[in-house]
Length: 115
Image (cartoon, rainbow, N blue to C red; front, side):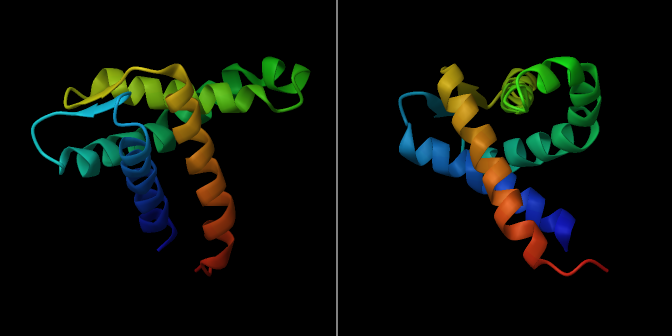
């Protein structure tokens, strides 16, 4: 259940950014691209983000954790680069998506019972 919730948070974050910043988030072909891009973002967060966090541990410690937002935004940028149907043209929108995912996981994940 927790994995499904994190996937939904990734999809919703991309959708909300597309809705709030239509000039910076371009979706090509169909609206279902958001679901596919959310899935790619979810997989990047599962497999690549832990490695990026380990590599950047010194910078994260020196900035008292603020650099982790940059790492999360880099994962959004990596998803944008890997996925052809989505185009995010602003770094600040990538940071907004990263913060939205972090806040969504922080608020909703503890409410789901661990099994």
